[in-house]
Image 1 (cartoon, rainbow, N blue to C red):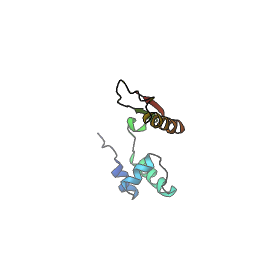
Image 2 (cartoon, rainbow, N blue to C red):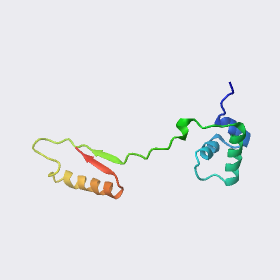
Image 3 (cartoon, helix red, strand yellow):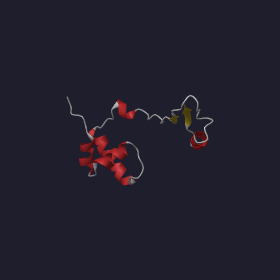
Image 4 (cartoon, rainbow, N blue to C red):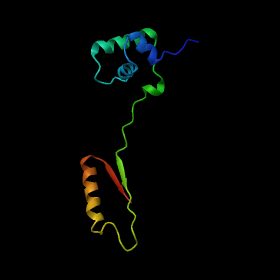
Length: 104
């Protein structure tokens, strides 16, 4: 059974760091085009194949925030002179950043 090609193998063959190989294979910016081509060429020549899990598309981050406030039965946060403006400020900031706010 042939041995799996590693990022270290590609780094050694292309004369760059492991970090550079990782950045190139994940198609990240900031790598000189000549270096990128050298790394991709070495990967191709060595027969590198990404794991299926590595090739899966990245999920977008969940854009939600939860705000939990402990209150007493006789003091609702919505009407409390301290909590009401705090909640309004959090809600405004979330709305600007397109983050869903859950309040409980």
